[in-house]
Image 1 (tube, rainbow, N blue to C red):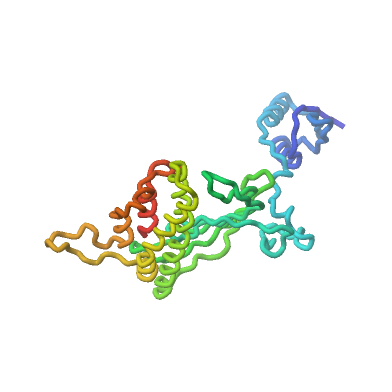
Image 2: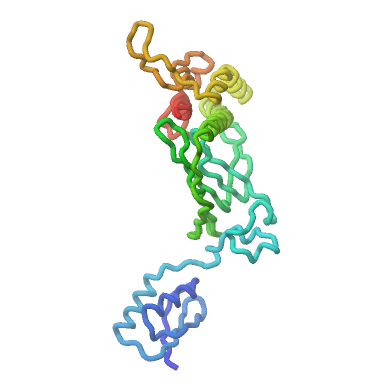
Length: 306
């Protein structure tokens, strides 16, 4: 029996052995002693060049603990689902725990949903705020739209699972084929998108008001009142926006000059021109949570400009 001993703490021995054997065919198997002693069994002695190549391979081997590359969802699976491929574990029915969902909605499109193991409330700037931890899986979706904003197709959602160490598992899953919208469906999709946009902006807007006004001494109760006042004031604008997108159709102004606001969303123009003192006091503030580069007014105008 011909053996050679090298020293390095290797955790992923299976991958290490496979790659070592593909580099040097004389390696038959290996045994690990202690924490860093690796003994190779060889079919014949290594040449100096092969020995040098093995040393270089060991030094540069990108090790990883195989335990932490296991998708987290497996550890939460019920006994009857534990032997399934992790793609096929039903995260709603076949887990021993309830996952917590966080959605990312941009301009009325639900572009990403992440399911976390934990969610807790923490106080940020005096406001109870959801904080999520330990991601388990996520689904990402995108749409193809024409120049007018009508949905041509919904691209296949891509599902990604998180490993025990928090990294993304390389084995993603594309859920199905693209969905192409018929003409009449485009109208319904537009209404659903605008309705979701209005729903999704209400609570975050109140959080933005709290972020910029509470450090200036405004109470949480007053923040909530300001937010409700704004939502009530814009209720008719929201409804028109949801139903028909409500764009300005006058091509010219009363003096005969071209209308610079032609085809702009009426709600966007109103937000731009808003001078109500109760709204203006927070609309032009710049929250750090928006990157510290744009005001709440600018943020809302961009969201509704679809």
